[in-house]
Image (tube, rainbow, N blue to C red; front, side, top):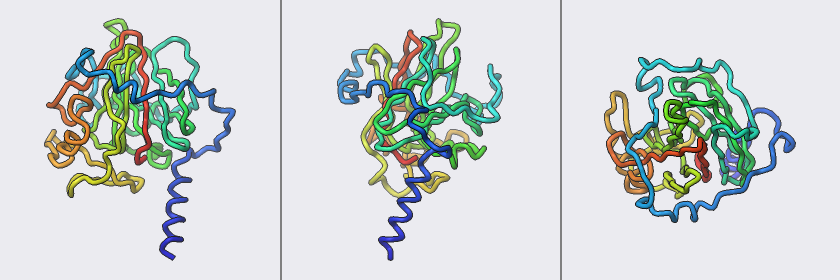
Length: 273
């Protein structure tokens, strides 16, 4: 009976991970080429410039509500299965999971409703275009929680911004400050990269975990209210990943890269959405 109940629970979790609208293969463009993460990560960090923050704009409404923003927060998100590449700024997302996964784009200072989200088939890669000067983050998740009108901050963040004043230079990092629900790898066309792909969600010490609103256990935020450091998850992230590859807090490492051609690529191993 226990095995049957567990099987039903796993089946329900798998169904809940799929998008709320019916998927038609015809909705998604053909997959772009998949990444070779081992080849990307073979480039030594010492061979390119890294930044502690560079021109990256990282604030959100939970950190600083005094900043003026160049956009209105979305009242409803835009769904895409892959955008047309018109040569403007954007990012590719390589979903390395075996099934469809959702990825949610949030403007900085707009945490309650995503600006855009994309569902990508397993082992497939799609392009997402962004407006000139876009500033925000991408998170993995499921529609039931990410589209319920409430902030869903817990998890790994891919942070990206484009600097209009400097030729739309792009900046990117992977941040575990708000938690970790799995790996993310990001790189520019020159091969400069940050992030990680290894599984780090099991074996952490007591005090390192928090539960997402959909019931998934993940590594908790490393910074609490007022910037207080949660040392147990922070030290776990440093041990498992390292501060040269991700933001573990706002004080360590140089985990930011830039691009002059407005493009980034990303690889997402399966996590706990």
